[in-house]
Every structure is written in C-alpha cells, then in structure tokens.
Image 1 (cartoon, helix red, strand yellow):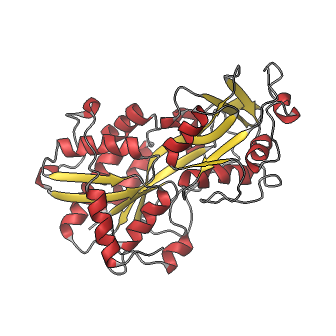
Image 2 (cartoon, rainbow, N blue to C red; image 1 turned 30 degrees about the vertical axis):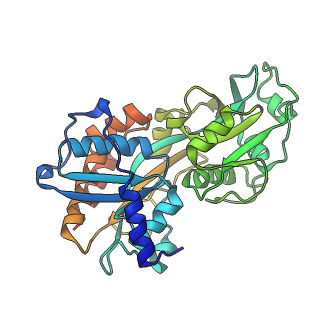
Image 3 (cartoon, rainbow, N blue to C red; image 1 turned 45 degrees about the horizontal axis):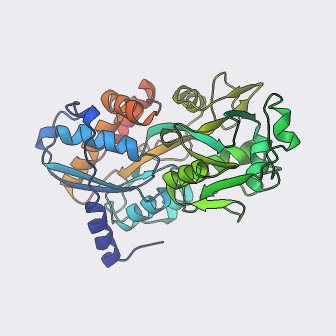
Length: 363
C-alpha cells in the first residue's frame, strides 16, 4: 500500500506524538558516534513491535548523548513500518523480515534519494517463544509436525496422541486447543510460519506468510495482544517475541534428537549457523535463517529484526541522524542494553563489523 503525500505528513505527525522516553537503567550510557554531540533534529521511525523494548533502550542511550535529538518510533508492526518507509512517511523502519529482492527491484523508497540502495541491519536477534496456558502443565516438548497441526487446526485437543507422545509424564486434559495468531501483518508471523513450512511442509501448507492464512483460532493485534490473549485464556497457545513472553508456560521445540527451549543463546547459535542472502547490495545484510539446523543448542524459531534505512538521503542532516542512531544500536553498549532490557542476543563481532561498514556508507 502506498501513502499519498498528505497521508505521509499525517503519519509523521502521528509518529512524532509517540516519542520514546529514556529507560532509567540506560541513563548515562555512551553513544557510539564520536560526532554525536553535533547532532540535532527529529528522527521518525515505525515498524516491528518485537523491537519496541530494544529501540527504547537504544533511544535512551542515543538521546542521553544527543540532547538536541528526538527519536520517535511507532510500533505498528513490520508491514506497516516497511510501507511507511517506502512512502517516505518515516526515515527508518524496524522489520522482522528484510525486504524481498523483488520488492526492492520493483518498489520505490520515498525516504531515500533517487537510485539509492537501502540499508538493512540485523540489529535485533530474538527467539520467538511458543507460549500456552493450560492448567496443571508448565512446559511441553513438541516437534514441528505437532506444532504445525495445532496451528493448522488439525490437532484440536490437548490430549491428542501426538502431544502425548512427546510428553508421556504430562497430565494432559481433554481441553480444546485455541491457537492465537496475529491479526496484523507481522514479521513475527512470517518467521514463525517460515519455521513451520521448513520443518513440516506436509502439515503446514500455507508457506511462509506475514498475514495469517486461515480463520482457525483467535486473532490478536500486535505482540502484546497475542500474549494477553494467551494469558487470559485456557487451552490457548500462541507465538510471541521472547522479550514479552515472561511469566508464561512455553514449548521446547525439537532440534535433532533434543528439545530446546527459547533463549537468547539458542537464537544466536541458530543465526550463526545461517548464511547471508545472495543478490543483495553491500549495505543490505539480510540473513537466510536455517530453520532446519541441528546445531547443538540452537533454537531455530528465531527472528532477526532489521533496522532499515537509506544508503543515501536527500537531506544530509537526516542521514547523520540515521547513521548516529544505527551506530548506537549496533555498538557493544547498544547490544548489551538490548540484551539487558529485551532479552535479545547481542550480534557477533563479525556481524558488527559488517554492520558498521554498511552504516558508515549512509550519506
């Protein structure tokens, strides 16, 4: 969906009203940019709800060293963020998936100068927790085919033999299963369905999709909506970024012969086992996640959420703001702040080197 100019201006005004406040735990943290004190102005972004806590931490860090800068981020979902960036309504986006190569080749990017490449930085790595509420059960081991059956609507009761097979000691009631999914266009949905499609294509036949393809179960807006629906129900199961899935029962997924719970460490192992996507610009660091990895300790139900900007902006001050903010996000301090506040996995030194080169190309 493309926004017209008036809609874009309205979107900027709406985003500007949602300025993020600094988290007390991060006050005084150093910013990554040596020239940060010279920066001033307002930077507007929109996108993934998964990154919201991390972006709050990065904003606190960045603004503490740049008092004349305001960073606004509107967490409306990955799809909305990418659309707003393409329309020029915001200067950067957060997205739980990178732009596809055909979207880049055929699309326009209103935020960017003409003929500019885009910058896609994998700044936020996090497991997607499969969460549930079921009286008397605090943890479950489930293989991919069983998970696919639950979310496809072919496994409808918690005492189903497929669930019992991997949980022989659990007291499973004959409670109806209510799968909860995102109602909005979501990168978290894209990553979760990508895992199902890669590991159980004969059961989950809808493929990797951002918009939920069936009417099965219950729909909820945003990550917080899914979490609240699962917590408030009985027999409910859903998927959500791990940062917002504390204090609720979760699934251990099968990896090889083991069952692995969601963790930042497991997410990092899965990403390290995954190659970069081919056919991309030097500033586009999209990763092709290996959902079928059997690496020890890996948790393949993982999302890599991107900060997306332009390699070249029409306005030099906007370029400086984006470069400074992205630099703060990928810095060691920024990644540690994200890990502390959102439970994400800090990017590796090797990935940081590549990301720093891409950010440095912004002009």
